[in-house]
Amino acid sequence: MKKIQQYKFVLIFLICVVFIFYSYEPDFEYLETIGELLSIVAGEPINASFPITFYQSAYVDYRFDPPRLRIFTLNKCLKNNQFLLADLYFDGNNSAPLRKNIYGKPMEKTCPSPYIPASPCVYSPSIFSIGLRTNEDLKKVTIHLGSRKVELNVQKIHKKTTEGLTVCVLPVHYFSQWQNIVLYIEAWRAQGATRFIIYFHSATKETWRTLEYYRDLGIVDIKSWPSFPGLPSDIADKYPRIDDSAYIFSYFLAINICILDIKTTIGTVADFDEVMVPTNGRLLDYATKEMKGTNVGALSFENHYVSLTPRIYTSNFSGVESPKFWIFRRPPKYVFNASVLAIAQVHVPDTFIDSSMRNEYADGGLLHFRFNVEAENHTTTEKPFRFFPDDHSTHIKNMHDTSQKIFNGAVPKFSSKYYDTLQKCIKKITPVQDKVCLSTGGVCKAEMDKVNDWVYDKSEPIFLVAT
Ligand SMILES: *[C@@H]1O[C@H](CO)[C@@H](O)[C@H](O)[C@H]1NC(C)=O
Ligand SMILES: *[C@@H]1O[C@H](CO)[C@@H](O)[C@H](O)[C@H]1NC(C)=O
Ligand SMILES: *[C@@H]1O[C@H](CO)[C@@H](O)[C@H](O)[C@H]1NC(C)=O
Ligand SMILES: *[C@@H]1O[C@H](CO)[C@@H](O)[C@H](O)[C@H]1NC(C)=O
Ligand SMILES: *[C@@H]1O[C@H](CO)[C@@H](O)[C@H](O)[C@H]1NC(C)=O
Image (cartoon, rainbow, N blue to C red):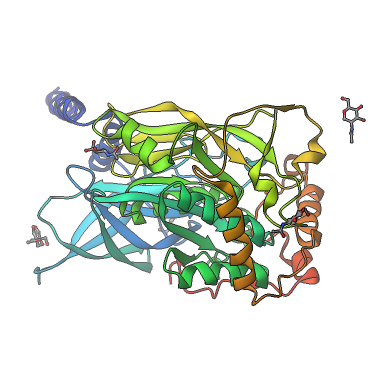
């Protein structure tokens, strides 16, 4: 009887704590707080037998109050009671580091992915996180997985104060359409973009040269996104290679890390064939006007497939003047207030730091100049959207001159061979039937290496496994 009384007390105490946390914290925090509470009750430390790889940096995100330590990983699906055993090293503290149990959750909310092509994949992206005290100056995180450990450096993230627009580009894999990049960067710049963060895995030499050109102008940051590392040797034969069993959704990692790296007030994530434009004026002005001082945390742009005649691959950029719009339903993309987006999905914002924030449809469109859209055979329609907010002929001439400059007057002839080879390789795999994961990295490497001498990322240790 006495025992029951004691447990009852613990239970009531826990309920109270949950209630207190719930009434203070926005929804997003609530789940994590439960996770933290569970750590008091029960839990299982993740050890070296668990397949997981870590992004090299842990982030202290001061956009949250209190600040949150956030650790990005790619791993087998987690159980609710599994946690990382971490030592937090603070500045000005010669005593022992602070030991914490840090719980994680999948970026996609459910694991394995409910999306059919991704569901056979073993690895999915997760965020482990825990609240810190405001005055603590974290310097280093060491994660203990049984006898093995991983050390992460620490980056600090604050509210974004520089006026401007930063564009994040998902990891570039086997990319060959350098013309897209010229149109992309020039159009986004004209719409107000001040910086591009591009995660790079592999591309043709022409594509690399184009990226280098813009990097040297100081507007593009090229960030390493190497192939994922092998697992530690004692578990390597128990699981598929990470690189072979992570769906494109491993991109969620890059998106969410990129949001933290943004320093401007507004951000967006768009592929090299996507430009978001308002019906009137410049995107940066439009988005600032719609979001500043409001509870609109993101603006979604409806997806419109466009084709350009003549094609930018076989001619100059004159087709950009009058894009043709195709009726073809695809999900939207969005621009966001970079101070408030907590977790991003590819097509919609997932959660905001301040739960009163919401996503709204924009008066504008996403111009999606998808390769071979003409082959889809759908009907065309009229839309008022254009790539540039001002005189197109100046920009078309500028893109022409820029291409000449990049290639010293010898603009290479375009070949669709590389694009076609990748598509053919991907189509050969029928994920569910084969119980194979349709991954971007490893699966097509051998096929791709047969047709080109690719520029690969130099594989700095960006993703870490326990040693
Ligand atoms: C590692 O964790 C697994 C599952 O969580 C457990 O079954 C195993 O006993 C643990 N190994 C060691 C050495 O603690
Ligand atoms: C120093 O570390 C101890 C735990 O080992 C912790 O209780 C204390 O708050 C830390 N002090 C500072 C200034 O971070
Ligand atoms: C972004 O959100 C912050 C915090 O709510 C707000 O102060 C700021 O005005 C917003 N900025 C823009 C550009 O929407
Ligand atoms: C661009 O290409 C089109 C069609 O191929 C051609 O009519 C036009 O003269 C070209 N413009 C320039 C500036 O080369
Ligand atoms: C496209 O569709 C139209 C009618 O829907 C059809 O007549 C035509 O043959 C199709 N073209 C191709 C290339 O499939």
